[in-house]
Amino acid sequence: MSEWPEIETYRALLSPLISGLSIEGTTVNREKSINESAEEFGSGLSGRKILFVERRGKHLIFHLDDGNRLLINLMAGDWIYYGREGEKPDGEYALILELEDGNRIFFGGLRHGYAYRISAKKLIEFLRPLGPDPFDPRLSADSFGVRLRTKRSKLKSALVDPKFISGIGNAYADEILFEAELRPDSVIAAMSGDEMRKVYDSMRKVLEEAARSGGAIAVRFSAEDMLTGGYRDSFKVYERAGEACARCGGTIVLETVSNRKSYYCPSCQK
Image (cartoon, rainbow, N blue to C red; front, side, top):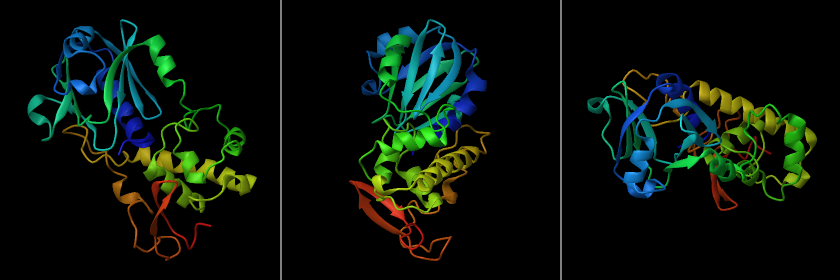
């Protein structure tokens, strides 16, 4: 799972550890995960200093001292491990970055995700279709409602649309809607202003709480890491079909909404 809380957790953990360090070597074990040949990718990163790490939606962005960016997109089943060679958990690592201090960044999986070396200009164009970040200071409750009114879909479909809001996927959309006490198949056109405000407030509350607990990352970030994955047991409805609702005691169900699996409680989500 790699949604807003997981990627924000990686950003918060990585940035203070690697900012100011140079990349001394790369190992590419899965060339399909990068956007150029392994040789070009490695030579382009060799000697480059990482200035800082940014997050945009579900993307991690390493800002490099030559003006280029390393764009990381993690999908379900992908993970990042930071540390020494002998410390990393078992698994398939598509890409490994060797840092000047002897530590390495191991990118696990990347079968559907990717690592692209890209110019700043191309990055702007690449990310242009994305909607605002859930915590963009310009995204007020009112502007969120105005944007939501333009959607002609079911409520959950809007939340997971990266052109509407960037960073939310199936899991946290279900949790946000549970918090807001609204069904995933709610018709947006029929929603009141108060209901839209509840979605906005619930979005910020759920994502902030999940990030503070390290998200639902399955593999820990480092040997010393005690944060990542701390939210895995806090899901109220996601992957809890058949269980009792913690709020009302009803039974959580799994249904398909606009071709997406959706978990919710029909007793208290109206």
